[in-house]
Image (cartoon, rainbow, N blue to C red):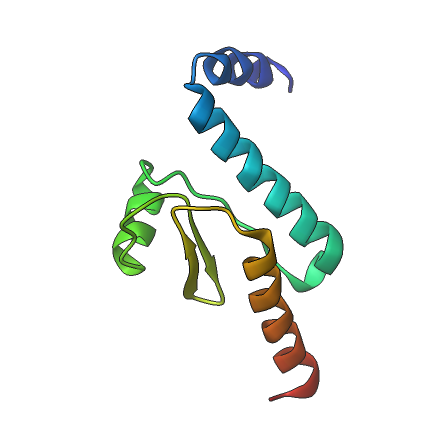
Length: 100
């Protein structure tokens, strides 16, 4: 249903530019990782202000957002670094394939 998209779009436009840029970076990272690794990787995005986001923030001792967690390990905090995330995902995929 597209009604929610219009509401989100209007809300998104009211965000500060820095926040919009961060949200776009996170979205781009998720799309790239999912495109490269497909079903091998499960990508989930949580808003730190949501109840589950707050729990994740405490669990991973997040001090700055955005925070990227791969295989239950914090790999990026305060930035979106595709190359670092890709490297960690590659390590996980290799372990799944080769068992190391």
